[in-house]
Length: 136
Image 1 (cartoon, helix red, strand yellow):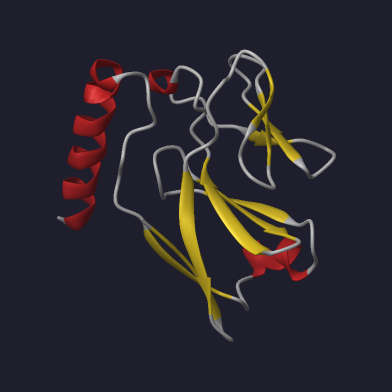
Image 2: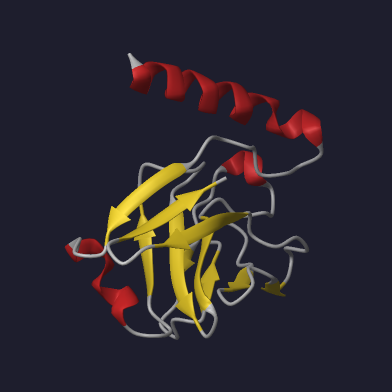
């Protein structure tokens, strides 16, 4: 039942996205990942990034930079109604929107290659000794 409610909320936000000025919709995010989770081993060192499915609009990217962890929605900020999920580049410092070719920096989410002009949607990140918590 909870899954159906979340899906309905995401659907409502998606369909209203184009009417609100071409921005990534706001969806509830409250993700807790144990630091022992094998999906996040890339975050053990600075500069590592992982893609997490099933949260946010199009998934979430968690990146470990100089100042700790940052998290972004994978939904590109360029024409977000298309729900294009950005992908990690080989460099590990940028992600690319496969629909438009836009590139974004993982350090701050800012666009580094046109046509995007807005940064990726950022989420709050807290860490404890045992887990990484991403929320809004």
